[in-house]
Length: 106
Image (cartoon, rainbow, N blue to C red; front, side):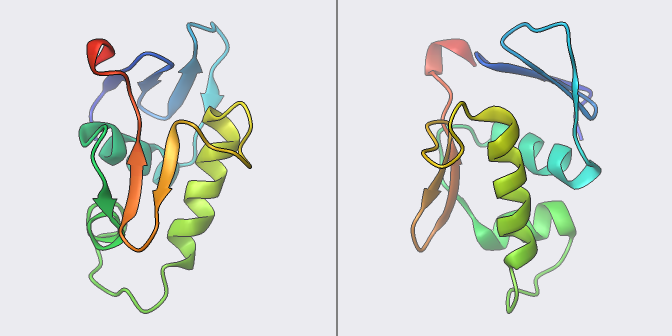
């Protein structure tokens, strides 16, 4: 995983997440940090569930991806103003997930 990643609404340093230039860090679980780093590396593109399982959990087993859904939900609670109506971390039905980042802020 990268040491530091920055976009318009957060900064990720190892497992510490800083929202909107807040000095207060939100500590991410290891898999949350890995998941966010993969999504950020593919910002504004749909990342398939298979790719996320392979990159984050190092598995090609896709019969049960509930753990992915749980981690996406946890990330939404940390980065979205309203996790029930996400504006940043979107589900692309039948395909995967997309982290929206304004292109002038990457």
